[in-house]
Image 1 (cartoon, helix red, strand yellow):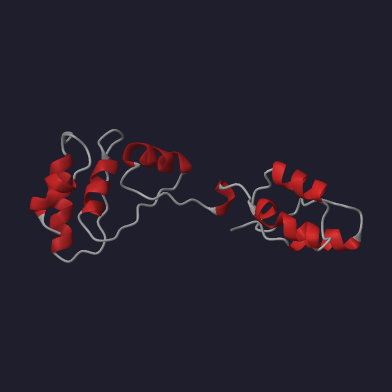
Image 2 (tube, helix red, strand yellow):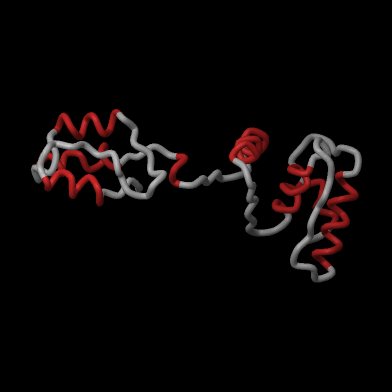
Length: 151
């Protein structure tokens, strides 16, 4: 990392008070061989912009948050600069839409049951579909318990 790249790497139009100095200190620490730098700053000081600047100065980086609210804020602020990834329970299940025809052809489910499962938008919070259609026979119960709900 080079300190003279800060202006190019900074993602906002202008710096807030203290941002440039904080970035310079972090860059010096990394250049001095530190692997980890912790930045402690108050709410509204622009920590996200500081972190994005440092991320822009290296080849590959990851920006982790502890809440989805912070992740959504980053996406809103820097949507053209980041790729958002969340846990599988944050996405709708596409299993029945993708494989429903095969389940019907193999007579594991009726078309009505597939349509209902797809419309119910079953999530993947538990890793396996636990609320699949129940058609009344043992085979359908067995299939609904083991069907994975992920891409």
